[in-house]
Figure 1 (tube, rainbow, N blue to C red):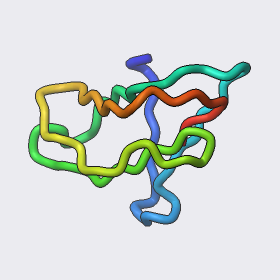
Figure 2: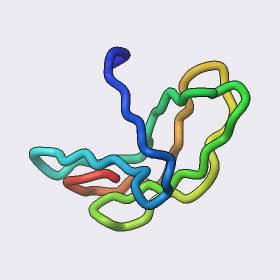
Figure 3: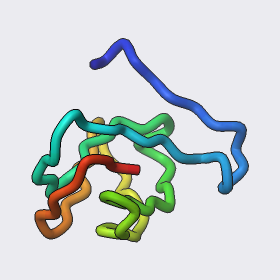
Figure 4: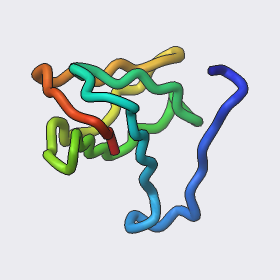
Length: 78
């Protein structure tokens, strides 16, 4: 949804968001559009049901970035 956004206070311990699904889903990627996407990279950790599935830095891009990882089943993504 292009009209939704999320921000943090800039502190790493508070810089997270969690989505919970109504049923178990198979997840293998997250697609993000980041502020400063052409000039900045961001450290990202992705968890599915509290299991780390991605740890890395976002690439610089001209819009959206897709972060792929092995397909994992879960009811939440953080």
